[in-house]
Image (cartoon, rainbow, N blue to C red; front, side, top):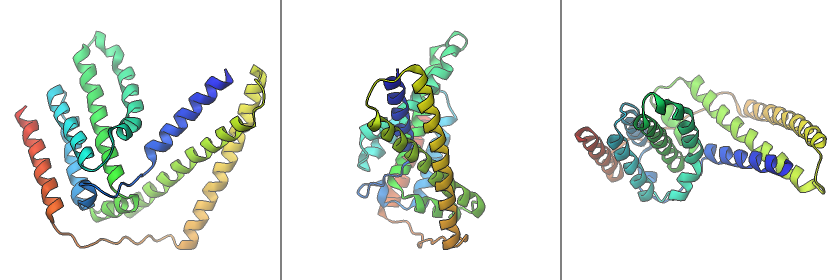
Length: 246
C-alpha cells in the first residue's frame, strides 16, 4: 500500500511541477513573435474557444494550436504530459451530465478545457516568465497584481519541488515494507517536515526580495511589427475566419 501511495503522490507532484514550470524553447516560430502580440493572439483564441459549444469550432482552434506547437518546436508528447490530467479531471466532473445534457455537451466541454490549456501551455513554453510579467505591465495590469503573480508562481513551484525531494528522500531510505501504523506515522513526520521546509524557504525568498529591493523595474523593448508578428497576425486572422465560417 505504501508503494501505491508513494507512486501516486510522486506522479502527481511531478505532474504539477511540470505543469507550472517555464521550459523555454529557444528555436521556433512563436519564440520570434513579440510577447505582446503573442499574448493578444492567444487571448483572442482562448475567448473564441470558451464562447462556443460547437465541437467543430472548438476542434478547429485545437488543430490550430497543435500547428502552432509544431511550428514552434514544442513536441506533442510534451503538450500531452502537461494537459492530460486537467482534461481527464474536467471530463470526470461533467460526466454525470450525460443523463441531462447528453454526450455532446460532455465532449464539447472537455474539448474546451483541452484547447484552452493547450493554448496556455504553448504560451508558457514559448515565452520566458520574466518577459510574460513585463508584457502584463505593458498592458497596464496593476503592478501589485503582477508582483503577486510573480511571487505566487515562484512559491508554488518551490512547494512542489520540496515535496518531490521529501518523497524521493523517504523512498531512498526505506529498507523494508511498513505496517499501516508506520505508514501513518512516517506520513505525518514527512508532512511536518514539508511544512517546515516550505515555511523556511518562503522566508528566504521574501528576505532575498527585500535585499534586492521591493520595487521591480520592467523593461519594455521598442514595439514593432516584424515578419514574425505579421505572420502570426495573419495566422490568427485565418483561424478566426475559419472559426466564424463553421
